[in-house]
Length: 142
Image (cartoon, rainbow, N blue to C red; front, side, top):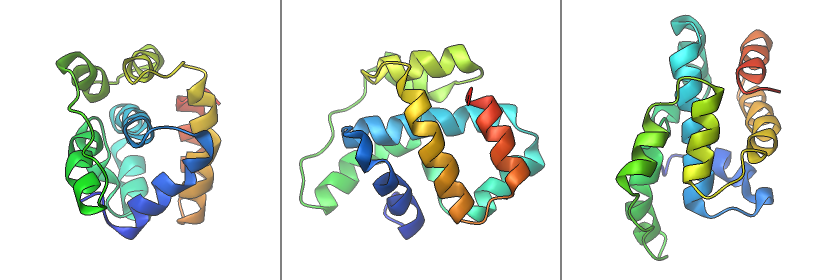
């Protein structure tokens, strides 16, 4: 569930970007989907171990859970994703796919450059290995 402390703290770290919850969760999910698809399995496993619950955010998983989370928090439910947006978030295999996913969420691809340092800082605070952080930064174009 998105409501675990680590994933909520991760999403809170993105609050400075003035995004909708759907954009924050979806952008994070797209970046994590790229990481899951491109990193060696052991490196991704280390990230998943450092940040419990992170698999709940990968691809379109997190955005699909937002409706329930919005209701739990007393807010309005997030609008359902179009099939095109779900597809863009669910199959991020390269930087072009990441740009497409951000576009599908209504964000300019320059937002990737704003997500990257916040995510890397958060993962570092959670104990992710510096070599893993370096790999993620390279993968995300930092």
